[in-house]
Image 1 (spheres, helix red, strand yellow):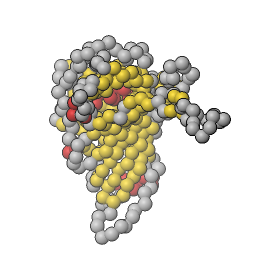
Image 2 (tube, helix red, strand yellow):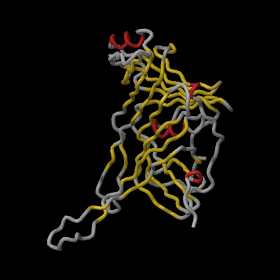
Image 3 (cartoon, helix red, strand yellow):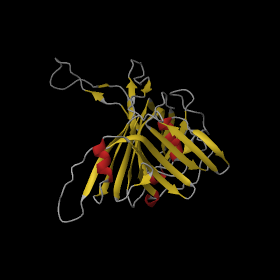
Image 4 (tube, one colour):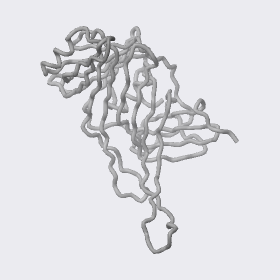
Length: 316
């Protein structure tokens, strides 16, 4: 009997036309991923009944909860599919080999997906339907692998012994490196930055209606949030002065590799006044836990621009 191994696992993703209805076979992308916690669980409720002795009666099943995190590479192609799930379809312009995809925060509806997690050696294939992307976060540093964690909520999961995704669409993977990263404020590159992070959330709310199948009705977007932190060596007062002013500032977090790039621009970032700690004889650092809000112009919180060679992010 074969035993499942992560090296042979597959993650297939396809956008749904109708919420909770997976697309037909052949309409799925083979998605690169580092780890996946996507799945459904249905806990047991212990019996509370008395009068049957010291041994309890049989438990009953509770409602189904389907969600989890998937860690994905920040690359030049597949990240656009996850961004579509998080922000909605982008506005795409350009011609063969050079396309610019612009995503905007604040949309009222989000696309749903079906994601199949497969272990072919068992075989076991779990199709999660009605999947909606809840949040994304990533860390920025001088070195290391560049990955993002995407949190998703789903309506439910259907296990099977054979894949329902069919032949998967593929593209060559071309990742950004940590050294491609940059953080700017007010249009100027920030100096002395040690690390940074970005956390965007749709703050989804499960619609937990009463159904005979125990599934949820859907996921409604709540008020979006965009937060993060920037840690700098304390060599100047650029960020501190901005924090003390109380005024918002434009900040951009980007990866650029030649003509390909990914840039998240927060149009109105507010910086807190940090505590400058002296912990020893070494270098002094300051961490700014920033928050973004809707700007006056443009009237949104964030814009993400991806430049690559894919004309769109529809199902293959």
